[in-house]
Structure formats: C-alpha cells, structure tokens
Amino acid sequence: MPRRPRVVLPGVPLHIIQRGNNRTACFYAEDDYRFYLEWLEKCAVDHGCQIHAYVLMTNHVHLLLSFDQCGAPGALMKALGQRYVQYANRTYRRSGTLWEGRFRSALVQAESYLLLCQRYIELNPVRAGMVENPADYPWSSYRCNALGVENPLVSPHALYWSLGGEADERLTAYRELFRSELEPGVVDQLRAVTNGNFVLGDERFSAQVVEALGRRVTPGVSGRPRRKSAAEEVLPLH
Image (cartoon, rainbow, N blue to C red; front, side, top):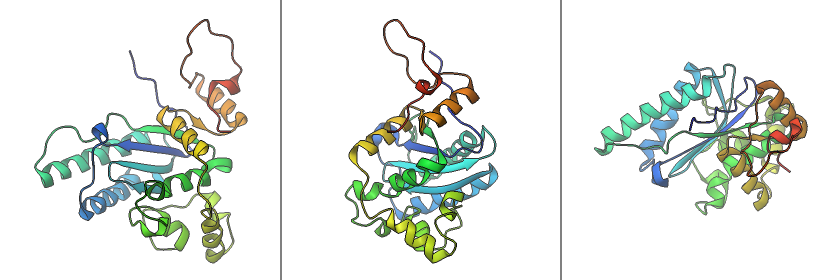
C-alpha cells in the first residue's frame, strides 16, 4: 500500500516529531545533543527552513519550522538524520536503524495555534517529569523564546514578534503563556494530528488546506462513505 503523501504547504508552519526506533534512546550524552543542534542549524540554512521552536528529548525530537519550498522539511530531516546516524554509529560503535521510519508532521494554523504548539513543544520535559520549569531544561528553545538567551538556531515567527514592541515585552508575554500547563485533551489532540499527518487549525483553515491540496487528509472510515464538506476533510483542533 503506497504511503500517504505528506501534508505540506510553503509558508505554513509545520510541527515535526521524529522518534527513536522502537522508542529507544537517540541521545546518550551532552555531546550528542550539541552535535544534533549544530547540524540542525546547518541543515536548516542549507534547505531554507526557519526553526521557531524545538526540544530534544531522550528518545525523540520535536521541531516547529517554516519553509518556502514543499520539499524543504523532508530534505532537512533526511540530511540531518543521516548525519546524526553516522555520528552515533561512529561514536558508540553501533550499526543499524536509529530512527523510527518517517518523521510525523502536522501543518499549523499560525494565527490561532502556533504559540500553542510552541508551548506544547517546550513543555515536553515538564510533562515527562524531567524538570519542574522549562527553563531548567537545556535542550529546548524555551530559554531563547522566554528568557532572551541568544540562540542562532531559533528564528522567531511573526506571531512571536507581535507579542510586544520591545524585547522585554515579548519575553514577559511569552512567559505568561506558560503560567498554566496545557489541558490533557489539548495535548492528546496535538499528538493525534501530528502522528496522523493532519492539520492543526480551525474549520476555515482546514477548508483552505483541502482546497490547496485537492485531496483528503484524514483516515478513511469503514462502511459506505458519505459525501463530506471541505472543512470535514481535515481534523480541526477544538
């Protein structure tokens, strides 16, 4: 059965998850995280991608990025994945698969859900019980986005810049978004749309994606299909 094409549109942010094979560890030491981030920055530049948020967990990676060419995210992840596998195999004298097949992804409606997605990404270490505050985790974009720590890898989205006219205003406004954790239902839906290669947005955004791509982007259902409206063809976040 052929693989379903990715849902990608130039200019629309994309949330990516890549997991270790069988959920096993991808990173073992601090040098591993540093190597991955160094090459993520290089590959993002090479393939015309802007990284808005990221987190490197022990056995998986989250990225939120924008791009101008449809093939850019795939090219970035292929180049980065190959480079990191070569490094890991050489460093740990291993061989075989490191990543769990294709990366998962979801288009993100910027004006409504981009900052929500950034919170989801940067709160991963808190949800996992690794730290109490996202600022205590060194392998994410939170310190850059919330505290102003310089990070050449991060390219803030226009929605981030709109949080305030001055740097202090933006940083304060961004930290305020983290005063409460995401509701479990929201977390579940964010996971579902990303693991399913769907879209994260309202009905209007959903309809626009269907019109642009000209195809259905949700799983089929059993039984006799009924005719659906364009907005029903994708999975909106409620």
